[in-house]
Image 1 (cartoon, rainbow, N blue to C red):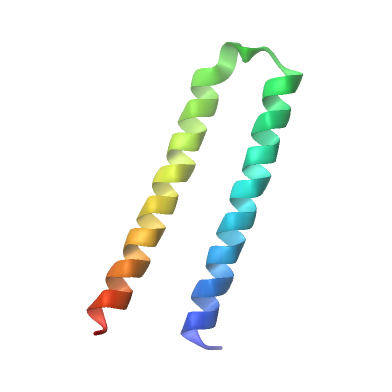
Image 2 (cartoon, rainbow, N blue to C red; image 1 turned 180 degrees about the vertical axis):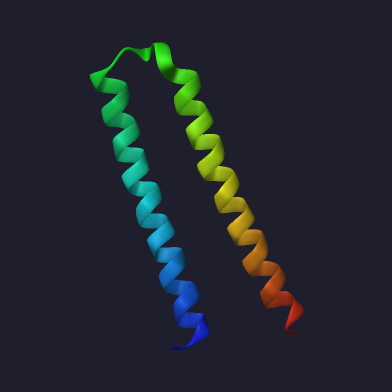
Length: 66
């Protein structure tokens, strides 16, 4: 398998996981009390932080090859 194709597949899987997490978050907010909103904020901070790390790592690898 081509490395570029693998990275593309992993990025697509990550985006699909973000969409699923967004749908679950919206469902959680509508089905329960809003009292646990710091938990939701913490979850999205972790997910977003991980995404930034993945993108930064990918960009560092790509630019180190040139």
